[in-house]
Length: 121
Image (cartoon, rainbow, N blue to C red; front, side):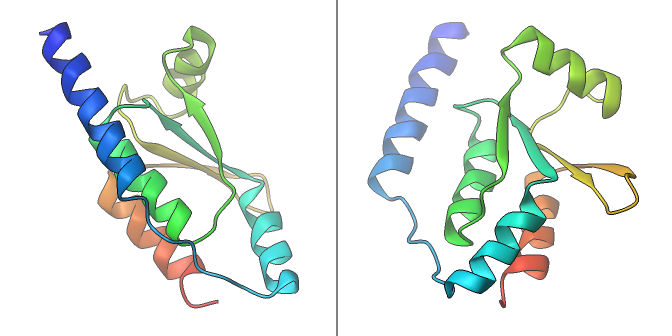
């Protein structure tokens, strides 16, 4: 099973590299504001996970600089389990202005949130 996952992962990453989406463009002031807003966000992910690729493609489309954390690192995995309490990726960690932390799972939900928040700027 590991061999199949490895091969499929390589295929997914190759196709993602070949068909990489084009980033939207914003004027420098708006992009700086978006960059500031995304500093409090992180995505917990696995590199070859197709759902994580889906979220990374959305991030690229929307020109978002969100920190990516690979859960293959045991410390990062421990962070995810301590905070989000679910062993599932992708997971978007959001910290609001008051310091409240929200953990969002499901690639479609994450992409819809990112589109709604940053898509029309």
